[in-house]
Image (cartoon, rainbow, N blue to C red; front, side, top):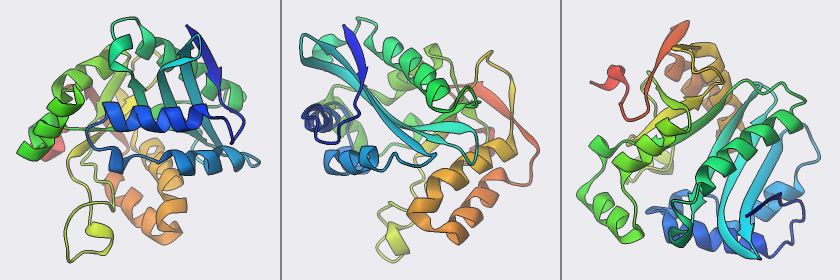
Length: 241
């Protein structure tokens, strides 16, 4: 297995990664399409770094991960990590995760302090989503346990993706409310700074929402706290119980 970072926006493996997303994730429309990934790689002239790492075996794509270093926060945010069904059980996900963390250290000159992801909560999945999971060969509960094994923990805050929902009367469809925010921090601490969480999402959401809306959403997420608990990744935030 060979791990490599894609640096050429015209690399044909970007399209293969897009197909992998469509095949292994139950809601591929929620992910960044391959045609935009090329642009993200092209835009890496500034301090914000968009990174695509691939795991390949003699030219065959086994898995990949798309993630971003956010210099304003000193953290990373991962948009996707997936492994082809035929390659599962071979340690591909762990290898990609470890390479992802090392890449974040490399592009940040060692400044990256944490990596965040948002992941569907199985208790808030609809029947339609569960059926889609089955068709994609995935399971939300097992996915959360797999992330825990990689060192991720649930951030004990009520998390919403500000837009992308399916409410017909709200701008942008309203918030997506079926996901939780997970964090990976070396050493597996029991707490994380709420400001670090908020700064991460401010930085991640600003190009998407604009600074004012991103600020409102991040401040709401912080909920006036100083530190928040990190829970087992299979648990949901206590704030929603």
